[in-house]
Image (cartoon, rainbow, N blue to C red; front, side, top):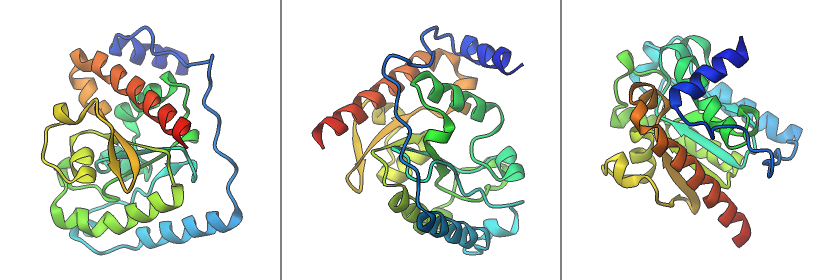
Length: 223
């Protein structure tokens, strides 16, 4: 059933080359220390108890993040949706399945990256985050970034990209360029939920992923 579902998503994207890369597999990050695990646990507990903005009154639970705690790739989305709010995990449901396939296409598993959102609580009716909500969560995100120390950040979707880059430029103007956040390269990619609604953009989505791969390769060569 899992393979059938995977093939359905790949077929929906219409990109035959979206297959795992085996010639040059991406190495898994190094194992993490107990001290780092404790630090992450403390931060996650702090987020779970947060009441800094009004979203704490409407959430089912916070959605902290998931993946490798010192991953090379940091994936940042906008905010939890209904499924994320119910399960407490980022990028689940149909959009999450597609994100998994997008990562798999470039040789990455969800266990090799770290995935989180700008907001840790779901906005009502999945509306865009308000400025005060972003400000309330910003410290948590910055601390996650400091702990992960990624080599590249993927800003997934318009809201995440505009927030991280402090711009109101449309996503079409932000794609295909290497931006930076605190000296870490940032590549902007389409949100999988958008791709499910706008299949004609699927080729551009693949271009974004290839561009991200080239970016992190160049970063590694320059270190």
